[in-house]
Length: 293
Image (tube, rainbow, N blue to C red; front, side, top):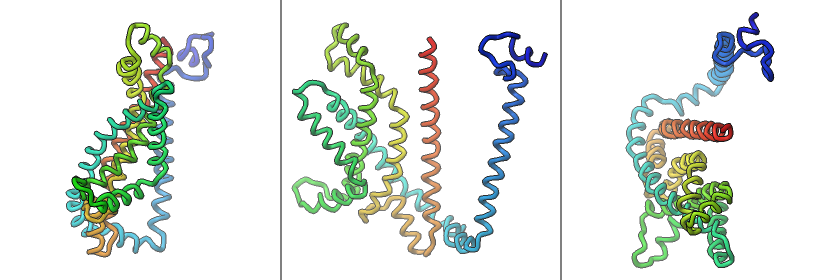
């Protein structure tokens, strides 16, 4: 009788031992699973915390990394300097979104006439994806101003942003290109049959669908971009979050400012990560719903 409560007897393709979704048995199993998950997490993290707190070196680690007085002094200063990281991220992101799409479209152009442009775009992406970001920042930040060219800025901040734009444009262009290539050729054929040119088909049919599909990986790249803004501090004169943490650390001979900066990054990046997860789940549900139609 209990099994028939969840499923009608003889329902094809249904295991009568599994409660139906939304039934009392399903809710009981869900609650039991949640309880087990919570208990296992508490036990595992509790054991890890106990091992850390009982380790011989914990007192010195706590003094060097978790000094409350140093944290209270460092956090507001680092937070103010971190606004420059946010500025670099926002400026770079605008240029990256546009330039990366241009590079991706160029690499997707068919025909032998566009071969030189495709080759240049491919070389660009290969070079800037293959060279570490910190090296690009060094080469531009120290090399470009040294040329002494008329009208060329010598600001470390300017060249740091340019380096980030060049590197991340290469990465994001490949994300765009993957989205463009995921659009079935029949979409372009249908658009051409309606009288649209190849360029109009790309603009109104392919690119909008491709961008919508690659939003989750784009968000992942921009999480990385937000973190990599700290690399601009290596140029010396740019006092952003990491550089300010180094200044405070040198004054106190204590590593707590780095913990404060890490906390700021976590407050920003963790919500963005959850947004990525939500976007991925949403796209999966949309595709599953489309496949069931």
